[in-house]
Each structure stands twice: as structure tokens, then as C-alpha cells.
Amino acid sequence: MKRIFVWAVGMCAVCGTVSAQLTLEECYRAARENYPLVRQFDLIERTKDFTVENAAKGYFPQLSFSGKASYQSDVTKMPFSIPGVEFGLDNDQYQLVLELNQTVWDGGVVRNRKEEARAKSDVQKGQLEVNLYALNDRVNQLFFGMLLIDAQLAQNALLQAQLARNHGQVSACMQQGVANQADLDAVAVEQLNARQTESELRVNRKAYAEVLGLLTGRKGIDAERLVKPSVTVEPLEENRRPELSLYESQRQQLSVQEKGLTARYMPKLGVFAQGAYGDPGLNMLKGGFEPYYIAGVRLSWNISDLYTRKNDKRLLAASRDDIDVQEAVFRLNNRMETAQQWRTVEKIDTLMKNDDELIRLRTNIRKSAEAKVANGTLTVTEMLREVTAEDQAKQTKALHEIQRLQALYDIKYTMNH
Image (cartoon, rainbow, N blue to C red):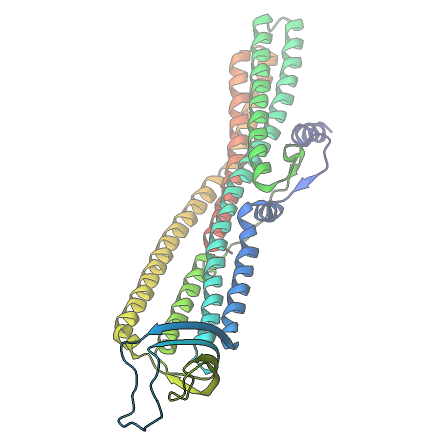
């Protein structure tokens, strides 16, 4: 019954009467949804849709209007003359033209522009995912910091319960003449120290909760009970970090740009129709304003793009090599960080092997000290030293448990398991 009572005191010290629970996964999800940067996903998608839609309009008929007025120093003249007939043209000429162009084949330019818009969108989303993924590490630090404080509060409650029993024991010893007021005061001092530690821990927990609340957009986190997560991580699991997807998206973007180089120097085929009103008209020998039209097929080929094509491809190859280097550096750093994190887990596992035995021995020593105080063969100060040592052993075990759990989640974060 005493053990049940002490356990209940410890749990109440941490949880109070609140039944609300908060998991680490809920914090991940809330932090992502609450972070202002997440709204850029919609902006990127809308920008891509607008760009693709605009590119598709490259196949729409293109209508243009132009006008021209000119004065020429000389005009076309007949090499012969006919008496009574004049064929001379005016030196001033005027023209209004409405032209309709329809692309038949553009060498793949429009299609490439659509692909470039989608590839650019994928790169932007990939970079955004990398930025948002970093939130998980911040959540981990805050969440496990609060878990550690909760464990310390639970142990502090057990310590206060133990000191309360010691206070009653010393009071009984005073009545029997084997202890004095100074001994009782020594226990009271330790009780005050324990209560001060509790107050400090609660202030620290509230500070952690406030920051986590700002990050996740949740209110009242300080009143919620954190659920200790369970995790299993295999040493050889595949790396699924968003940075790797970003590198792949960047390579895909370069491939699309390389296709664009080919599309740029391909010939273009289209049809056109012109309706005009000018002086002179198509009949150069007839003066005055006249309407006319022209329709036909147009083939154009801008070979000047070939001048820079080789260097453009070299630039794309250099960019691709740069991405390869960045990925290689990231993977190397990632492997080194993961190896160090696994060594941390192994070190904690080694330390935890002795935690239970240390607690058992410290508990036996503390009980023996209490018995000696009751018999008058040990001072209260010496007994309190053993009580503190037992408490420290239990706190160390709680610390190791949280540290190991956090180390495993650090590995999950590093590899995105």
C-alpha cells in the first residue's frame, strides 16, 4: 500500500488532475501546420499553374497590329515612258497592318516551358520540405526536455515522500531521546531544498511549454501530460532525408533545361495572314490607299543559338557536378553523425546496465542508515547523505532513459526513419 501511495503522489505531482495527453507525433504535425512557411506550398503550386497555363498559350493565334509612315529618297520608276501616262510613285508612303500568326511546330519550346515550370516548382517544394523538416529537431529538443523534467518531478515527489517519512522517524527518535531538534531541522532543510527544486523544475517546464506552444500553435501545453514515445531503429535503414529528394529534383530541372537547349535551335514552322491598308497597295504601279491581304507559310530558323550551345551544355554539366558534390558531402556528414549517435546509444546502454543495481544498493544503504538512526548509532546528517545518494541514483536512471530515447529519435531525425 505504501508503494502504491508513493507512486500516486509522484504521478499527481507531474500530471495533477489533467487527463489531456500530448504525443510527439502530434507536436510534429502541429508545428508543421502552424509554421508560416507552410503557406508557400500553395503559392508555389499556384505559380506553377499560372506559368504552365501561360506557356500553353504559345500555341494560341498571335494577333498584332502595326502602322508605318515613311518618306523615301527615291522610288521605283519605269525604264520607259508612255506619252500621256504617268507611273511615278509618291515618296511618302503609309501602311496599316493587322497580322495573324499561328504556330504549327515550334521545336518543342512550349512543351519545354511547361516542363521547366513543373521542374522549378518541384525544386521549390523540395527546398521548402527541407526547411520544414528542421522543425522536427526543434520539437525534439523541447519535447524531450519536458519529458526529462517530468521524470525529475516524479522523482522529486518520491524524495519528498521519503523525507516526510524521515521527518516522522526523527520526531519519534526525539521522543525517545536518541535525536534532537538540530536533527529534525536537518531533515526540514532537505525538505525545503526538495520543494525549491520542485519549484525550479516547474518553472523550467513552463518555459519549455511556452516555446513549444508557440511552435505548434497549441495553448495550455504546460497542463498536458506528455506521452513518452516508443521507438525502434535499425542501424541499416535507408536514408530518406528530404535533402536527397531535393538533389534529385535539381538534377531533373537541369535535364529539362538541357532539353530546352535543343528546342531553342530547332526551326519554327507557322502560318500567317495579313490584312493591310496602305499607300501604295500591293500594286506598286497604282497610287492611292488600297486594302490588301497576304497569307502563307513561314519557316524560320535562328541558328545564332548554336553559337553558345556547347558552353551552355558545359554550364549545365558543371551544375550537375556541383549537385553531386553537395549530395556526397551531405551523405558523408550524415553517416558520420549517425555513427556518432549510435555510439551515444551504446554508451548509454552500458551505463544503464548498472543503474538498477546502483539503486538497489543505495536503497539498502539508506534503509540501513534509517535503522541505525533509530538505534542511535548513526547521525541524522549521515542518514540524509544516504537519502540524497539514493535519490541521485534514481535521477541518473531517469536521465539515462530519456537520453537514450532522445538519442534514438536523433537517429530517426538524421535518417528520416
